Length: 331
Image (tube, rainbow, N blue to C red):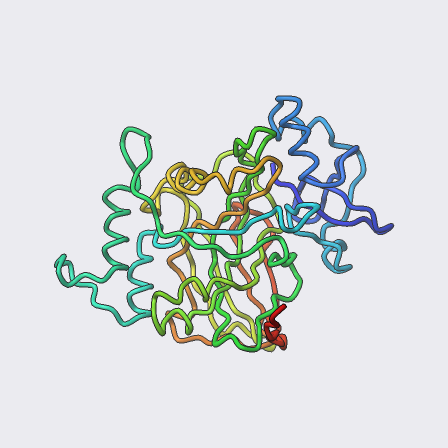
């Protein structure tokens, strides 16, 4: 089952199940997926079973929701600061080559000549999928922002005027909510665009933290249940109505050097990420970037990331916004 969040023509928030590419079946007695998840935790029922029990005969036209600008992100929190966006890198087979090419690094197999990027990737390949199902080696990790950095599908992703680049990163995001005792519960998965400033990162890999402090988008559909082991998708950039770059990408554990369980373990081992009622959006990484092919997105370009596993494509135009940097005052 795949769910979306939207507003009705009367302005009320709603949750809908995707029937097909043109039809949404609205859920009754629930306005947000956050509410739905809370009800599932309180009742002890599975999220998909609960959603199925709330299906109504009220149908909505999917395309009209999009055309009217009423599509929302598939998860949010009533308080933006209680939703955290983070992620992991060097998790996909081939991701080290992309990163190494970005930094023009030496990818020799000799340990003494290997860069930190290649060393970490090698650690993941050798220890990211422990056979016993226990925790393996920890991945690269980054913080992206809180709920205010999330942009709804079809809406413009802002890039600050001081940014050197605004490049797409087609990734899968895990969506989680913590129960009343702080135990993380996975709600589902969504396709995402983890926008990053690759030129800043290329200056020095220690600038990775800076490069990740950008807006992002994911959805529009939330996939309930387990993530398929093999996922195929396409990432493209459209400029003035023409595709200027397009490439297929692979994801899912068959194409990763870490298991989802291992990535989850190393995120939620920190108490700060297990606060009751908080929502976590966690990007799982990618090996496919237009930046690696020399593409520099411009204002007005539209990013399109799609996979049949996740239904409708995630589409967002790019918008450069002036960012006035405040001056610190002494009290």
